[in-house]
Amino acid sequence: MAYRRNSRGHTVRNEELGDLEVWIDQDLCTGDGICAQYAPEVFELDIDGLAYVKSADDELLQEKGATTPVPLALLTEVKDSAKECPGDCIHVRRVTDRVEVYGPEAE
Image 1 (cartoon, one colour):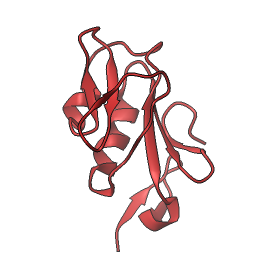
Image 2 (image 1 turned 90 degrees about the horizontal axis):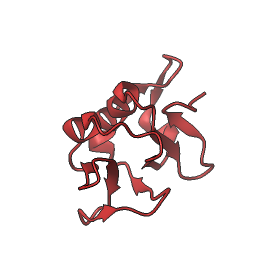
Image 3 (image 1 turned 120 degrees about the vertical axis):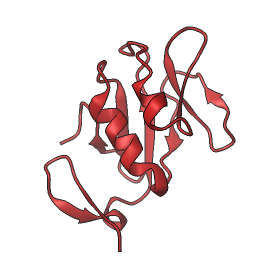
Image 4 (image 1 turned 135 degrees about the vertical axis):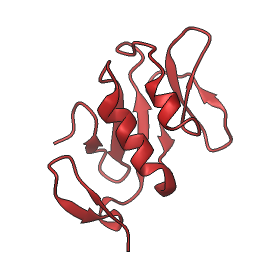
């Protein structure tokens, strides 16, 4: 059984989170590319120098507020991207209730 720590440092099972999705607020993106270094399967810098999420088909999603599922195998990398992002622009939330679990608005 896989475990992880939530934003408050409590250990919980991944199953308790449910399905997660991630999105980037490009208005706050600094273009450092840390997210693409941590999880290139999920994030990519575009020609405009900003980071975007990618679909499961590896398509860059450039619509404002576009989300993509967080694969369980990449949860740590996506979480670390949100934590290390200098622009605080990466948001990871539960699909069911849209509560942010990692990122600047996480409880």
